[in-house]
Image (cartoon, rainbow, N blue to C red; front, side, top):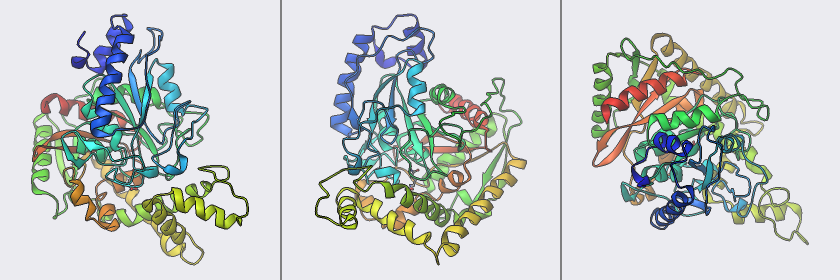
Length: 466
Ligand code: GLN
């Protein structure tokens, strides 16, 4: 059987009927993954898989699933892209993986990411940099770069699990030309996720089409007694969706004047296509967008700096012989040696913004701005069912361009993804077209809990965009 032409849905259907020779499928998959690994470096840990023998009543029945390295997988090294966690093998599965396995999935490995999610280009990884399959001198985006690159490059049925704090699902999906769903904050359990920033972290699927991400989303979402922040309300899908009459807002702040003109054109063409499907579009304004980057980075770093405090070589993280060293000296040695430059920068900045004396000026103020940003969206969603925007203001940059960027310039790359993540609203990035032969993503945003709207709008768009 030629597995290469099979979609995820076709694979699951055939697998349920026992029409797939699972050992043969996994042998081919293993060799394909090894070849991709050599060429593009998508995995921190790639496991040798044989597949399992799940019941045909399961929903994923033998489907290969990859997990971003920050999602704990039982028996597989999970490092969140950091040297400080090298060799850590969790004795348990994150809820998302436990649910996928229960539905018959096989976890094929842990994908490369920026250390603890700190980055937009996956260049802050301690385990090599993943390369974009559409241009090897370009970034896959970040921080779920390995997940999106693998999804784009692997020509066999598979869905990836990524994670987003401030855009890490949408950005790489956009740069690699695949579909990424960031669910509402709290919709998917974070149990077993190695935290970046607890009030922002979301796990979500990355796939080749809207149906793929929907399939995995339906399995991983829903209340989890192990994560008290999960939403109790069930996700419902409107299966009888029609584009006719759907109101789509175009936020004027999401087309910044310095944005790449050809990216803008691709997105405006996509909006025209939505109109041709019967949707009504109209301009709207999200006036606090300009404060989203400072507010996002203050909150994210403040939370990250407390989360990273536990990696000191005692209970968590690499250990060495502490004998003869004062504890301060020992902790500093471990953290100095095993954390990367960006992690150190964020610990220092994050600690500063929540220090007594600065807290009101920075951290508390950022929280107030976050509320204003949420209010902007709430106002827009009174008038519109969903909002459309470019996912990223440019195509995947070349590594040599990224090298020249200052930290602030890197942070500013999140100008379109920071605000929706701060607000915790769901978002879907779908391929809209290409600019200079590289993919451009269309971002579809909706109000909290409205995953069904963005999945339906995305699916209708996919039908005509090819
Ligand atoms: N680029 C953002 C950051 O560095 C977002 C990363 C993420 O979502 N994990 O914080």
